[in-house]
Image 1 (cartoon, rainbow, N blue to C red):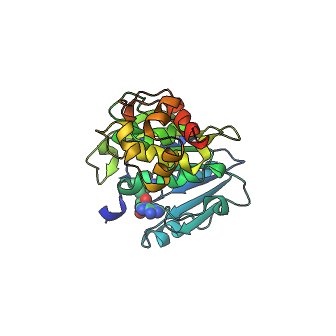
Image 2: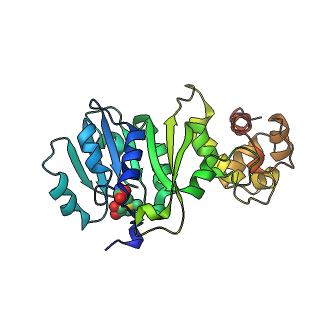
Image 3: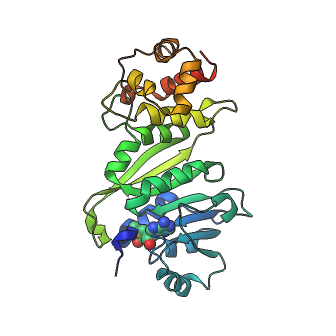
Length: 270
Ligand code: SAM
Protein backbone atom coordinates (compact mmCIF):
# COMPACT_ATOMS: atom_id res chain seq x y z
CA UNK A 1 0.00 0.00 0.00
CA UNK A 2 1.57 3.29 -1.13
CA UNK A 3 2.06 5.89 1.60
CA UNK A 4 0.87 9.34 0.65
CA UNK A 5 2.82 10.91 3.51
CA UNK A 6 6.06 9.63 1.92
CA UNK A 7 5.12 10.85 -1.55
CA UNK A 8 4.93 7.29 -2.83
CA UNK A 9 3.89 7.30 -6.47
CA UNK A 10 5.69 4.29 -7.86
CA UNK A 11 6.70 4.17 -11.49
CA UNK A 12 4.69 1.42 -13.14
CA UNK A 13 5.51 2.24 -16.78
CA UNK A 14 8.66 0.26 -17.63
CA UNK A 15 9.22 2.37 -20.76
CA UNK A 16 9.43 5.56 -18.68
CA UNK A 17 11.76 3.94 -16.11
CA UNK A 18 14.02 2.76 -18.92
CA UNK A 19 14.02 6.17 -20.57
CA UNK A 20 15.04 7.93 -17.34
CA UNK A 21 17.92 5.51 -16.78
CA UNK A 22 18.99 5.79 -20.43
CA UNK A 23 19.08 9.59 -20.12
CA UNK A 24 21.13 9.19 -16.95
CA UNK A 25 23.44 6.72 -18.73
CA UNK A 26 25.11 5.05 -15.74
CA UNK A 27 28.68 3.97 -16.31
CA UNK A 28 30.42 0.85 -15.09
CA UNK A 29 33.20 2.92 -13.53
CA UNK A 30 31.07 5.24 -11.38
CA UNK A 31 29.16 5.39 -8.12
CA UNK A 32 25.58 6.63 -8.35
CA UNK A 33 23.13 7.68 -5.65
CA UNK A 34 19.46 6.85 -5.89
CA UNK A 35 17.07 8.65 -3.56
CA UNK A 36 13.84 6.84 -2.72
CA UNK A 37 14.31 3.54 -4.59
CA UNK A 38 10.77 2.44 -3.57
CA UNK A 39 10.09 -0.93 -5.15
CA UNK A 40 13.17 -0.66 -7.36
CA UNK A 41 11.77 0.44 -10.75
CA UNK A 42 14.94 2.46 -11.45
CA UNK A 43 17.22 0.51 -9.09
CA UNK A 44 17.03 -2.75 -10.98
CA UNK A 45 18.29 -1.01 -14.10
CA UNK A 46 20.98 0.87 -12.18
CA UNK A 47 22.51 -2.18 -10.49
CA UNK A 48 22.92 -3.76 -13.93
CA UNK A 49 24.79 -0.79 -15.39
CA UNK A 50 26.49 1.32 -12.70
CA UNK A 51 29.73 0.47 -10.90
CA UNK A 52 28.08 1.00 -7.51
CA UNK A 53 24.59 2.08 -6.41
CA UNK A 54 24.03 3.80 -3.06
CA UNK A 55 20.28 3.90 -2.43
CA UNK A 56 18.65 5.99 0.32
CA UNK A 57 15.17 4.88 1.41
CA UNK A 58 13.24 6.24 4.39
CA UNK A 59 10.32 3.80 4.48
CA UNK A 60 11.13 1.05 6.97
CA UNK A 61 8.73 -1.38 5.29
CA UNK A 62 10.55 -1.10 1.97
CA UNK A 63 13.95 -1.98 3.43
CA UNK A 64 13.41 -5.78 3.55
CA UNK A 65 11.83 -5.66 0.08
CA UNK A 66 14.87 -3.89 -1.36
CA UNK A 67 17.28 -6.17 0.53
CA UNK A 68 15.47 -9.19 -0.86
CA UNK A 69 15.59 -7.83 -4.41
CA UNK A 70 19.08 -6.36 -4.55
CA UNK A 71 20.91 -7.38 -1.34
CA UNK A 72 22.84 -10.11 -3.12
CA UNK A 73 24.41 -7.62 -5.52
CA UNK A 74 27.87 -6.60 -4.44
CA UNK A 75 27.52 -3.18 -6.05
CA UNK A 76 24.37 -2.29 -4.05
CA UNK A 77 24.46 -0.34 -0.76
CA UNK A 78 21.17 0.43 0.97
CA UNK A 79 20.95 3.25 3.49
CA UNK A 80 17.82 3.32 5.65
CA UNK A 81 17.89 7.05 6.17
CA UNK A 82 16.19 10.36 5.54
CA UNK A 83 17.42 11.93 2.30
CA UNK A 84 17.23 15.33 4.01
CA UNK A 85 19.83 14.29 6.57
CA UNK A 86 22.30 12.18 4.62
CA UNK A 87 25.91 13.32 4.34
CA UNK A 88 26.28 12.42 0.66
CA UNK A 89 30.01 13.04 0.46
CA UNK A 90 30.52 10.46 3.22
CA UNK A 91 27.91 8.06 1.81
CA UNK A 92 29.58 7.75 -1.58
CA UNK A 93 33.09 7.26 -0.14
CA UNK A 94 35.55 5.90 -1.23
CA UNK A 95 34.33 7.62 -4.42
CA UNK A 96 35.04 11.36 -4.30
CA UNK A 97 31.80 12.16 -6.10
CA UNK A 98 28.67 10.52 -7.46
CA UNK A 99 25.83 11.40 -9.80
CA UNK A 100 22.28 11.34 -8.44
CA UNK A 101 19.14 9.84 -9.92
CA UNK A 102 15.71 9.99 -8.31
CA UNK A 103 12.00 9.96 -8.76
CA UNK A 104 11.63 12.28 -5.79
CA UNK A 105 8.80 12.23 -3.24
CA UNK A 106 7.00 15.37 -4.35
CA UNK A 107 5.96 16.53 -0.88
CA UNK A 108 9.61 17.20 0.08
CA UNK A 109 11.23 17.40 -3.36
CA UNK A 110 12.36 21.02 -3.14
CA UNK A 111 13.81 20.48 0.35
CA UNK A 112 15.75 17.43 -0.91
CA UNK A 113 16.91 19.44 -3.92
CA UNK A 114 18.25 22.17 -1.65
CA UNK A 115 20.07 19.57 0.44
CA UNK A 116 21.62 18.09 -2.70
CA UNK A 117 22.69 21.52 -3.91
CA UNK A 118 24.35 22.22 -0.56
CA UNK A 119 26.46 19.12 -1.15
CA UNK A 120 27.08 19.73 -4.83
CA UNK A 121 30.86 19.51 -4.26
CA UNK A 122 30.49 15.73 -4.42
CA UNK A 123 27.26 15.58 -6.48
CA UNK A 124 28.18 17.01 -9.89
CA UNK A 125 25.08 15.91 -11.79
CA UNK A 126 21.50 14.94 -11.01
CA UNK A 127 18.70 13.51 -13.11
CA UNK A 128 15.51 14.05 -11.13
CA UNK A 129 11.83 13.51 -11.70
CA UNK A 130 9.86 16.34 -10.14
CA UNK A 131 6.42 17.86 -10.46
CA UNK A 132 6.27 19.64 -13.80
CA UNK A 133 5.33 22.87 -12.05
CA UNK A 134 8.50 22.70 -9.91
CA UNK A 135 10.66 22.22 -13.01
CA UNK A 136 8.93 25.21 -14.59
CA UNK A 137 9.88 27.25 -11.53
CA UNK A 138 13.46 25.96 -11.53
CA UNK A 139 13.98 26.88 -15.16
CA UNK A 140 12.04 30.18 -15.10
CA UNK A 141 14.12 33.01 -16.60
CA UNK A 142 14.35 36.52 -15.15
CA UNK A 143 11.13 38.40 -15.86
CA UNK A 144 8.91 35.33 -15.59
CA UNK A 145 6.24 35.31 -12.89
CA UNK A 146 7.34 31.73 -12.10
CA UNK A 147 10.78 32.92 -11.04
CA UNK A 148 11.56 32.59 -7.35
CA UNK A 149 14.25 31.73 -4.84
CA UNK A 150 14.62 28.19 -6.19
CA UNK A 151 15.14 29.44 -9.77
CA UNK A 152 17.99 31.72 -8.71
CA UNK A 153 19.49 29.07 -6.42
CA UNK A 154 19.53 26.46 -9.19
CA UNK A 155 20.76 28.92 -11.83
CA UNK A 156 23.57 30.04 -9.52
CA UNK A 157 24.96 26.55 -9.18
CA UNK A 158 23.70 24.43 -12.10
CA UNK A 159 22.85 24.24 -15.72
CA UNK A 160 19.28 22.93 -15.83
CA UNK A 161 17.70 21.13 -18.74
CA UNK A 162 14.15 19.77 -18.76
CA UNK A 163 14.35 16.43 -20.59
CA UNK A 164 10.81 15.06 -20.92
CA UNK A 165 7.36 15.14 -19.35
CA UNK A 166 5.67 12.13 -17.77
CA UNK A 167 1.91 11.71 -17.50
CA UNK A 168 0.24 10.68 -14.22
CA UNK A 169 -0.71 7.30 -15.76
CA UNK A 170 2.91 6.17 -15.59
CA UNK A 171 2.63 5.84 -11.77
CA UNK A 172 0.77 3.75 -9.20
CA UNK A 173 -1.07 5.42 -7.64
CA UNK A 174 -1.19 8.23 -10.24
CA UNK A 175 -0.28 11.66 -8.84
CA UNK A 176 -2.65 14.57 -9.49
CA UNK A 177 -0.10 16.39 -11.61
CA UNK A 178 2.24 15.87 -14.56
CA UNK A 179 5.92 15.29 -13.89
CA UNK A 180 9.10 16.36 -15.67
CA UNK A 181 12.53 14.76 -15.72
CA UNK A 182 15.23 17.39 -15.37
CA UNK A 183 19.00 17.25 -15.60
CA UNK A 184 21.02 19.54 -13.32
CA UNK A 185 24.75 19.84 -13.89
CA UNK A 186 26.88 21.72 -11.38
CA UNK A 187 28.80 24.62 -12.75
CA UNK A 188 31.92 25.44 -10.80
CA UNK A 189 31.77 28.99 -9.47
CA UNK A 190 34.93 31.09 -9.62
CA UNK A 191 37.10 30.66 -6.49
CA UNK A 192 36.14 34.01 -4.93
CA UNK A 193 32.60 34.10 -6.29
CA UNK A 194 29.96 35.65 -4.02
CA UNK A 195 27.46 32.94 -4.94
CA UNK A 196 29.29 30.60 -2.57
CA UNK A 197 28.90 33.04 0.28
CA UNK A 198 25.99 32.41 2.73
CA UNK A 199 25.08 36.07 2.26
CA UNK A 200 24.20 35.48 -1.38
CA UNK A 201 21.38 33.02 -0.67
CA UNK A 202 20.08 35.04 2.28
CA UNK A 203 19.98 38.10 0.07
CA UNK A 204 18.02 36.26 -2.64
CA UNK A 205 15.69 34.83 0.03
CA UNK A 206 15.12 38.33 1.43
CA UNK A 207 14.53 39.74 -2.05
CA UNK A 208 11.73 37.23 -2.71
CA UNK A 209 10.27 37.43 0.83
CA UNK A 210 7.19 39.32 -0.37
CA UNK A 211 6.79 38.85 -4.07
CA UNK A 212 4.49 41.80 -4.60
CA UNK A 213 6.91 44.24 -2.99
CA UNK A 214 9.79 45.94 -4.75
CA UNK A 215 13.34 44.82 -4.14
CA UNK A 216 13.89 48.11 -2.29
CA UNK A 217 11.09 47.43 0.19
CA UNK A 218 12.09 43.80 0.64
CA UNK A 219 15.66 44.85 1.39
CA UNK A 220 14.45 47.30 4.00
CA UNK A 221 12.34 44.65 5.68
CA UNK A 222 14.95 41.89 5.42
CA UNK A 223 16.19 39.72 8.31
CA UNK A 224 18.76 41.37 10.62
CA UNK A 225 21.77 39.72 8.98
CA UNK A 226 20.93 41.31 5.62
CA UNK A 227 19.64 44.68 6.90
CA UNK A 228 22.78 45.17 9.00
CA UNK A 229 24.91 44.79 5.86
CA UNK A 230 22.58 47.03 3.86
CA UNK A 231 22.85 49.73 6.52
CA UNK A 232 26.65 49.38 6.73
CA UNK A 233 26.73 49.80 2.97
CA UNK A 234 24.83 53.10 3.09
CA UNK A 235 21.18 51.98 3.10
CA UNK A 236 18.90 50.32 0.53
CA UNK A 237 18.70 53.22 -2.01
CA UNK A 238 22.50 53.55 -2.16
CA UNK A 239 23.10 49.81 -2.37
CA UNK A 240 20.65 49.50 -5.25
CA UNK A 241 22.12 52.52 -7.03
CA UNK A 242 25.65 51.11 -6.61
CA UNK A 243 24.47 47.84 -8.12
CA UNK A 244 22.81 49.71 -10.99
CA UNK A 245 19.30 48.57 -10.07
CA UNK A 246 16.16 50.68 -10.15
CA UNK A 247 14.51 50.60 -6.69
CA UNK A 248 11.15 49.88 -8.33
CA UNK A 249 12.36 46.49 -9.67
CA UNK A 250 10.81 43.30 -8.28
CA UNK A 251 12.94 40.28 -7.36
CA UNK A 252 11.49 38.16 -10.18
CA UNK A 253 12.89 40.60 -12.77
CA UNK A 254 16.52 40.32 -11.62
CA UNK A 255 18.96 38.21 -13.63
CA UNK A 256 21.55 36.06 -11.89
CA UNK A 257 24.23 38.59 -12.89
CA UNK A 258 22.21 41.34 -11.16
CA UNK A 259 21.82 39.28 -7.97
CA UNK A 260 25.56 38.65 -7.97
CA UNK A 261 26.24 42.35 -8.48
CA UNK A 262 23.94 43.24 -5.61
CA UNK A 263 25.64 40.69 -3.34
CA UNK A 264 29.11 41.95 -4.19
CA UNK A 265 27.99 45.55 -3.58
CA UNK A 266 27.02 44.51 -0.06
CA UNK A 267 30.17 42.49 0.47
CA UNK A 268 32.30 45.41 -0.48
CA UNK A 269 30.37 47.51 2.01
CA UNK A 270 29.14 49.94 -0.65
N1 SAM B 1 12.00 5.22 -7.21
C1 SAM B 1 10.69 4.60 -7.03
C2 SAM B 1 9.95 4.62 -8.34
O1 SAM B 1 10.35 5.39 -9.23
O2 SAM B 1 8.97 3.88 -8.46
C3 SAM B 1 9.88 5.30 -5.94
C4 SAM B 1 9.63 6.77 -6.15
S1 SAM B 1 8.46 7.46 -5.01
C5 SAM B 1 7.91 8.89 -5.91
C6 SAM B 1 9.46 8.27 -3.76
C7 SAM B 1 10.27 7.34 -2.86
O3 SAM B 1 10.98 8.14 -1.90
C8 SAM B 1 9.46 6.35 -2.04
O4 SAM B 1 10.06 5.09 -2.07
C9 SAM B 1 9.49 6.94 -0.62
O5 SAM B 1 9.35 5.96 0.42
C10 SAM B 1 10.87 7.57 -0.60
N2 SAM B 1 11.02 8.64 0.38
C11 SAM B 1 10.08 9.50 0.86
N3 SAM B 1 10.63 10.36 1.73
C12 SAM B 1 11.95 10.06 1.80
C13 SAM B 1 13.05 10.60 2.53
N4 SAM B 1 12.89 11.64 3.36
N5 SAM B 1 14.26 10.04 2.37
C14 SAM B 1 14.44 8.99 1.51
N6 SAM B 1 13.44 8.43 0.81
C15 SAM B 1 12.21 8.97 0.93
